[in-house]
Each structure stands twice: as C-alpha cells, then as structure tokens.
Image (tube, rainbow, N blue to C red; front, side, top):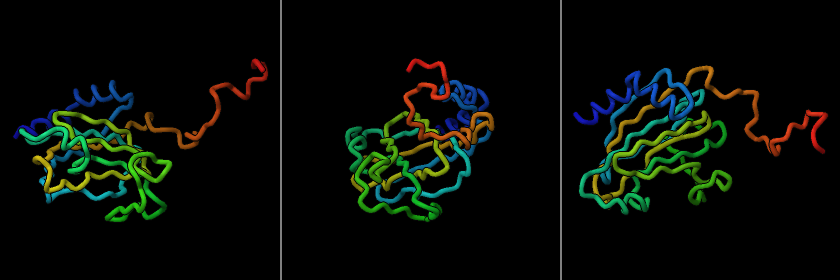
Length: 182
C-alpha cells in the first residue's frame, strides 16, 4: 500500500513540476511500475524500446535490517545498470557483454551503475542507444529491493537537437569569429 501511494504521488502534476525544476527538462508523459526484487529470484533484462531520450526516475527501498554495505559492495546485485547498445541488435532479450570490466563506456563497461540504497531517488536522462536493467539479486542479499520506476517522455522542446554533435572537441572558443584573440 505504501509503494502504491509513492506511485500515485510520483505521477502527480506537482511532482512533474518538481522534476522539471530539478532535471531541467519537462516530463510530459510517464509510465510507472511498482517492482519487487527478491533474493535469488528477480532481475530485469536489458532491452531497447524508447525511440527518443527519456527520463528514468527510480525510488528505491530496501528491506529493514539489511546491511547497507552488502548492497553498496555490488556483490549481492540489485543495482541498476546502464550500458550502451552494441549495433542494431539492441532488442535482444538478454544483453551479454564479454570482457566488460566495471564502469567506463570507453572500455566497453557500464555507462552508469546505481547501487541499491534505501529511501533514495535516482534521476537519469537516458539516450535511445542506452539499455537499462536491474542486476539479479543474489541469494546472499540481506533482503528484497523494492522500487517505484517511472519512465518519462520529454517535452519536444527539451529534446536534444539531432543535428548537434555531442563530440565537439573545441576548447569553447568560437572558431568562426574573425576578430578572435589569436
């Protein structure tokens, strides 16, 4: 019942206004799910599905009495991971990465991992080429992970310009300025 209340409040227009102020983008539509990940039983698989950038919001809650260090170590799973899709096979039901060693998109690892922490909200702006999943919760986990997951579509004016390159290696100077200080 408590998670249903969190879901109800998180889908309100007042909460959307708060998120717009915090994230700098305006959520216009959202999908919300309440999920439970039990030790030894539950996880999600990586999959593509959003054709444009979305805002992922996850309220995470952990079982009482568990050791926060167990969750923080990552050894018991339950963390949310973002990885770059490889090629056109982004719709694979199971995403396997051979040789991926931890974080760092340049070396084939995770783009981002968000550890399971009690009573937290994570906000991630996810590009269309990014897959997301919750790692299997080990039988060694101190308890269950619950969350309220929201995936928010963005206002069209807040979407990145498809013609703009994010790989700009300039130093911030205007190369087209003929009167620049050379």
